[in-house]
Amino acid sequence: MEQYSENLLYKSFGIRASGKQHSENGEIDTSSLVFIELVNYQPKYNEEYLNDLIGKGSNSWAKVPDKTAWLRQVRGGYDA
Image 1 (cartoon, rainbow, N blue to C red):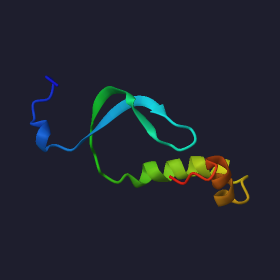
Image 2: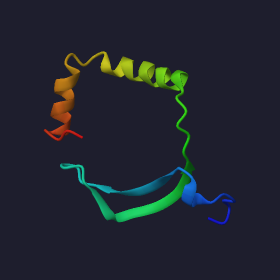
Image 3: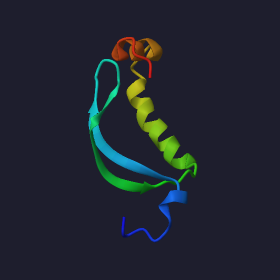
């Protein structure tokens, strides 16, 4: 925290953490969370980055005939 010259109380930022999540119900085990770092929050919309991710994902999803049904099957009835 010593490396931040601004008052963090009035600044928006993210936190990277590592922890365990229940595979069936998706609940996060808060007792297992370990702080990794503070991340600068940058709410800027990057259309090029988003389109690149959509392009990468489209190739993989092209082979799935019913995407909604596939997601329901993978989630096992758990909707996040």
